[in-house]
Length: 153
Image 1 (cartoon, rainbow, N blue to C red):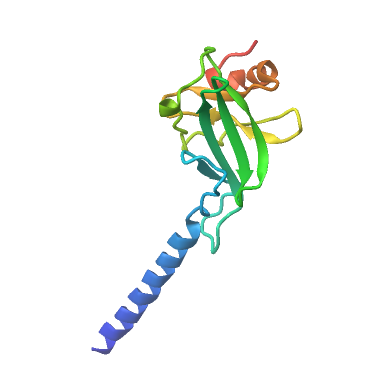
Image 2: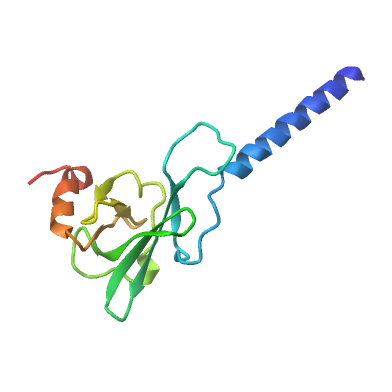
């Protein structure tokens, strides 16, 4: 009987610990200025954590007014870090809202610089398309070409 109590207490401690690790590993609440399709990318990787890791929110939307795709990058609290029109890596036509679904598995693996010295992720969509900032598009495309399609100029 005593062994069962010890096992029950240990199981309870393990369950509480697992719950705390799960709860703290969740991303922070999506800020109001991040589109509903926004994803959160952590800045650091740690095997376990006791609080949310600082990171970046990325969200994109199609604007029918100027017929272009816009993306906004904020910190974990919603403070704007970068916003620009984003163009498809291949092709010229903007991507409509229903296809602007960010790939959380691949976005954030490759980053580039903006004209303001800000790190900007190469945005991957689940349909395989890639978006790059319009500002300095050709230079950013040249810099990322090897990583995106395995070739160089």
